[in-house]
Image 1 (tube, rainbow, N blue to C red):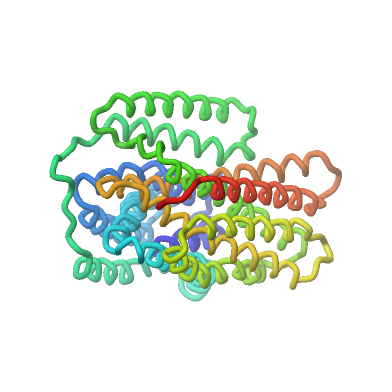
Image 2: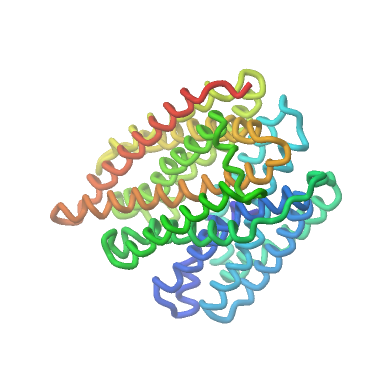
Length: 436
């Protein structure tokens, strides 16, 4: 549900803008506020799950998400919609930061990869059907129906979770919540992500971007200093002393940089370069998440038997190959070649995600599963923003140094750079050591 909601709103944004007679800059905040708040709150709610029980925070997240969805459907203005998307983001952060911890605690280590693989499959299915479902509902009914669909689906999920999720008890020695650390982390991460997200639009050397990035550096530096001397830190930095944990986090960030470079650049190639409409481009792009959805549970089950390092390493190698194939795409490239590149990239990402997530969660102590899940989700969002920022910077830079509207060299350069990032992630996975 959370993945579908994230992808479906991108599709209906032009319809929402027309409905409210709003400009593009204002309506973009419907997406931006969701991304920024989710990213900034993941660690906070992961830590609260460790302190007060993951089931309790998870169920509360469903209630808030359902309420936010209903309010979004009722929004009377663009400003109200942005505010209600913030409510949705609050619930989504509670869900996303606690679901991996619940799964990890509910299954033995020999089944952890399979469980996380099935979760990844649900995510990719949501990403796959979201654009088509959103476009269809907005066209057949109204854009408001896209948000209303979360209400019955969320209510059913809430009841199933209430019935079947096991009660979990926090650690015997109740630690205090690190409020100062939570505020510093959220402020620093939001400043960083906003700067990276808007850098290619506002100008990387503009005063607002430089101020945001400098502020992020100061705030996150203060956060680290605080966590090192706090008896009960929000983020237990000792987790990063483990080689497997640190490498799994690093390779996850690099993976999402490469993945979201595809999601950012390929629409420019397909629509502006090859003349497809948005529906046709969306159909072409489904090749990647479909293959990912098939591969993720298989790879997760294999990782339970043979370990995660080999699968994660080769998964990123496949992703690098898929990106390299896509980087060769020109004005006359056969559609079969583009589909092959997307399928190989999907194979690589589907092979990587479940084993890497299993290694990360398995290397964290049981009483730090919420923080580990929050770090895993945060690495995804940071990688996503970095990928879009990197791809956007390359796209605008290459376009500014050429004459005419030839989009192909810019897209090719961005995809080739992303292939290099995937190779680096493969190297990090290979050198991390065994999780056993």
